[in-house]
Image (cartoon, rainbow, N blue to C red; front, side, top):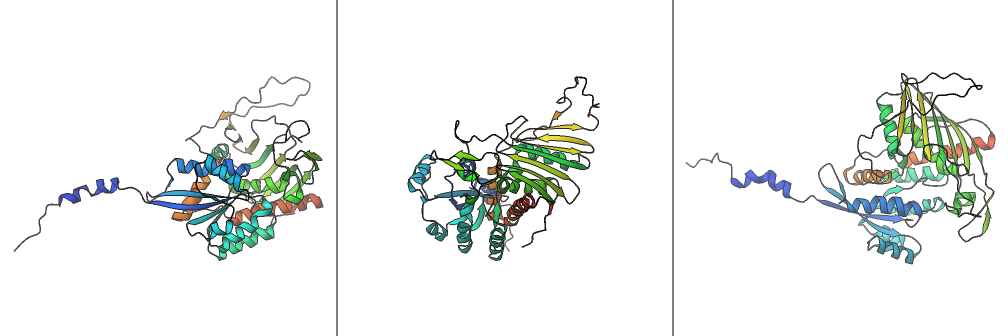
Length: 406
């Protein structure tokens, strides 16, 4: 009777090596990029995110597979799209959004249009069954935002909103300090954001004119309080109430055609936020301020055990034991250097572009179902806070922030 040999067949000895030699499976995802010819759409989302991901060979998943985005540039100006596609060495561009949505190879719809046009494009993408990723705010009003949120959830579509500031190196270092318990009990947060935007009469304006027209969706409250909502909610505590005053400090500017126009939107906002855990946050946001601070955005966090100041890239900290004793005496020049005693928070690893980092997370969410908590509902919360801040300004009072649910 024949017996089975105990010797392992030679081809099986090389199975691990053969598996290692196999090329990873590539998931090619068509990405409709609508409104990508705008400043943010071009620089941050196309060049520094999608093209950078393609250049690095895609995004690796947990299984070892690779996700490769295949963008199609969408807009209204065909010549502009053609020129951009050539510069970026891309073949796909179109002025026909409907045909792009009808193509089953295009699985993700991304929208970076002006806010007033975003709802229509997203609504079409929902009907087409695409995964949805958008710049913030996703719409101009909370009612529209909740309608899009409910429609996307009801259709079972994966959805996300850009919340880039969570991946800024300075804020990642700040989060590390929070997670490590460095602050003890956090007491307060002070945010300073903005810079001087020229009115165009002597020196060219460095932001689009629609930003300063309320009728076109402009206004710094609508723009920046969406950011501050997710920054506060994710780092310091859930926002429970808001008090805000806005201002239109610069009354007229010069538009892209060289014509003077009246500014109807707020260019500055002075807002305080109370969190459900007792933390008090105050943020000044202005396009009419000259910068004399560490960065265009700085956050100072004060706690019982220490304080820290974070900018876009750097973060410095001062512990309770390293805090100097100050005595108020206006009659004597203080010999103390107030910048002494602050230590740089080290960079544990190189940080990549914030927009790119979130894009990679969303691509893995679509293919591998990795967690992605920065959804349309979170976008709606930002719009809610902006609307309540405008209400607070109009009525000159504190306004509570109700919890939103799908």
